[in-house]
Image (cartoon, rainbow, N blue to C red; front, top):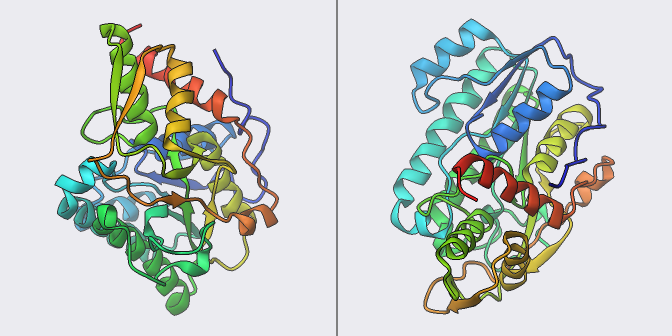
Length: 322
């Protein structure tokens, strides 16, 4: 079994460990990674049990009671291309409600610092690669994820607006495609890495000679292990100056076919991969320029193969199947 060294030896230095910290969306992949990272480094007033973030009154009562000093906003409905095709209204509405309620409450109740997680699909489809923060809102979005992207762009804009009008330290970050421990492996909501793991694991158990995969396999994506991403979010909250949009990339991009081959090896599936070009590919290339983050001194620490192994190990342990 692989072990992660992504965050274990990086103590937090710029935050009060005894101040209240809210991880809004702790049930999500990234929220869970943030909660583990903060707990491991001695934050004594970490709160992960938040109210229904889509309900303004509940959020307001929660902030009035707990008065957190720091907030990590990782909530909001998300999913892969399949979910974006069938539930675009749910995706945009849920994210808009969560962002509006949490960000506004953070301002009104005196939160010192907030980090808001965006999405790399918020960048224009035809923006120059690797994607730079300056490219946001410079062109048309990828149609297969446009509704979700608009919801995430609104969160970024809210952070900027509250900083401009009220002087709030509200920091938006855009991660590469995240995966890892605690991921969603359901066919309806899974992103590409957990979807590939689930399909190949099921094919392995069934003894199938081949597995069908969406698209051509040629699009390229940059991935980041969720525990590395959580480390970067805390790193940014500790060290960044005046908030401005920051990309968080894992440093390596590869084609979906290359990723599928890596997953096949980790899962131990020896069948054939059959790509279906009638299914959508999404953006042809999506990689991030993370030079702003690198200038703060942060680097990812978990090699891709180790991260895939940790993710598959967690899947096996929590599905009861081997």
